[in-house]
Length: 454
Image (cartoon, rainbow, N blue to C red):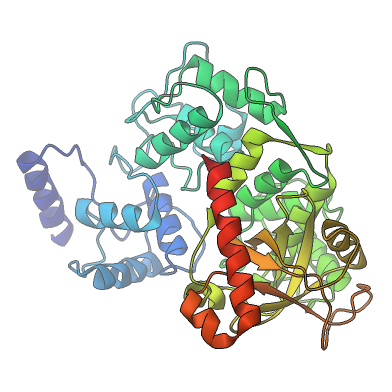
């Protein structure tokens, strides 16, 4: 009876507005829209279970918590108001409410990441705001790979997708109308294949292959999800793919976490000195993400195009370090990119207080960092971009001088180094002249970064 009244209320709301909303999601429902809800709740840290597409007790509890924080009616039911608030908070496109199974007229019915990834776009395809299909899903995945789209892959072309298309168009000399027509789709295909016909091809020196790093970041594993025996999801498929690329997994990438996947995780954990339990938790997933970024950095062509550097610059975040420093645990890994030289290296986080203390992860990372600093290890301050395991990249400044104690063995670095992130200048002045000097380098680097992103 409760569900009947809820549906009647939703229909009455539809008749009173111009919104074409035709679905209420609640306990017992299944479908791709439920996956979108679960993904959004996961991103906002209200939901910690597997993304299954089934609206169960855990999903309902997470919805109630979200509704409470948003000041909405805490009924655990996702109607139009809750869905729009949820998608706005998570920064993803709002589904069009086309039905419980998530399929709309004109779609082929394929909803898995694998189906979308292998879909081909027919000649004359034009995707724009309001479109809903596997072609849109593939577009979102392609833009994710290229570093333009950061939302959930839903197959629905909304505002987040339109903005990603516009950004790609601007960076590739196309009319920025937000419509993915023949020219835009061809340019995306060209970018994915590594060619650059009819694009700005000003080349900057590099030894890191920044575009490859961004692709690794875009497909990073979600470190907030624990993957273990019995789990079945696209995240497991990504885990298997990454383990395969690093030489630990040789089976079929099915998306199911079975004994072969567990054995691969165990082997990786032992090789990295992690707790070897065969469960891919936050520490293991963070280490895998860092290795993926390092692997991408090593696959260098020796050059970075200006358009790729602009894409990287556009993703950099300038935010008070004190607002987000606790999002990352000591012992996790992060990747430094020196946009001035193109060098990239991985650090292991030691502590985070007024700034971050860290160490080069390996002897190779120490060697690369030293090259970026002109062959020296000193207190010269350099503006850099630092990417963490969740794929977020922050403006920063660092020096290469080893000092005090270190924990990583065999990295040819006697001690640890400092990485500073934005904090208020008055706060830095209160800390001391060294902190103030780092902030000045950060602000200068931020000005350079914004110019590159234009």
